[in-house]
Image (cartoon, rainbow, N blue to C red; front, side):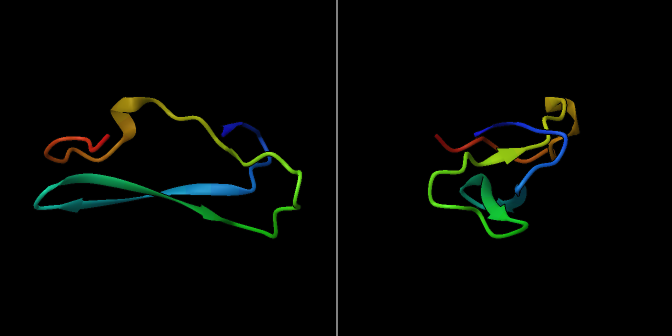
Length: 54
């Protein structure tokens, strides 16, 4: 997954008892050989959860 100013996916964060999770969700149809892209943001913009899950 790489950066794009016109991304085809976004991150959706969830804080759970077991840690902080992120899901990658398509914002439009993504072609079979098309790269999944998102807009980079600073880590400081991420929610303040417990621990990140590997």
